[in-house]
Image (tube, rainbow, N blue to C red; front, top):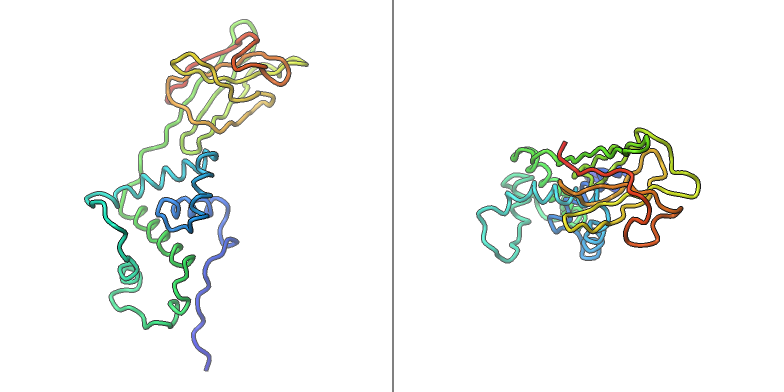
Length: 234
């Protein structure tokens, strides 16, 4: 008689892109990734605003796990994890699921799944993500842009709701200006809807200038600033 069939570990094809990113962010925050994968996730969080938002969300969700505990060396949590999942009676070694040897991938998946379960069932969801909005309207020409920045994705979406594309040989360029008054380019606005990954905050000013094709040759607008408005929570 053949023995019991061992459950297969979930593979990358078992999840969609968003689910894989969610699991990767959870494992990154939990510290269950191999060193190279952890460094790759860290580097991605510095460049990918949407992934960085997932990481921040998991840090908030899992923060209660740290409450009331002093700094200490990492304990051996495997027995507690086994007990939580399988009950007080530990399965006999080398049988069933544990015949897999608790390879790193399987353990990381179980730990991440347990963290997801605890975060969803034991703690209420965090505060609603911050949404910033602004309406940039030109005074002398029919031109208007609606800006919306969602902190959960780290993406600024700018929609040209009135007016046409820039004249031939020129480009609209988007700038963000902080309280120092120094502008920073966020890119060109050639399409009716433009999305830009960026970290923003209430009170920052967005401005649109008309520049030579390809954008300003310097670090500040060289053409007329057509429209500007401050970001505010919407």
